[in-house]
Image (tube, rainbow, N blue to C red; front, side):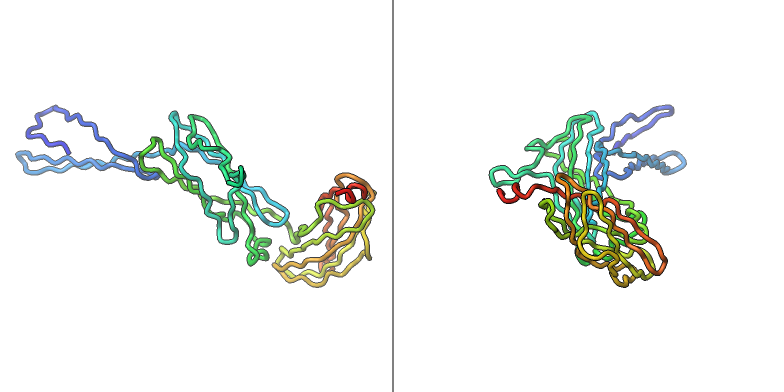
Length: 295
């Protein structure tokens, strides 16, 4: 507040006003000028807007997994000309998922941050965070029929420019484009880490009906140079309502060592007479029988 007893003609008032931005949204200051003239009291008001640009640039990317779980990569960069202190970075997952941080390592029985005790970012310096989002069991059926852009919670970043001052909250709304699976999605629920050459092993697969109609499914498997399927081909899986899923077990063996691809699976919808081909379902490590016995 500046008070003057007299303001002559063509005279200017110079004053510096100090204010602190408390939010990351657009801020404004309102100036008021009150005066008395021979004509009486006069009032003048002006509104000044100040757009605020946060010093941190945040980039996010989602990665899909075979079991509908997700990995979130967060890249934070200090684009300002001064040092910024990162007080806290936290993920608030959506209702369908539970979140877990992957930014710690176990040292002598204690979890320590991968960035150590250093909490600040120099100008143009960047840092990466990784999070794991696990799909809740009660939403497993719904996840397969989600289409388009979906909300994936939010990311809260607490930062400040100087030690001792109040931290600022920067919130990033997370969105993800749901992958398009077509009418049907085939995923792998269980597979051994290693298998012995020429010995049968089991895998558990899951089929989800992503369409809006009922399916009548028949499974066929075909042998390759490295993989032999056990059992009869042309197995009837039954009817699958829209948005539902079913699991089934397959038995196979490998004829070659090393990392082998499980493929040559065909699923036919008898109602539409349409066949879905799965050429790269998973990979399995095949080892000799002597290695297994020594372990």
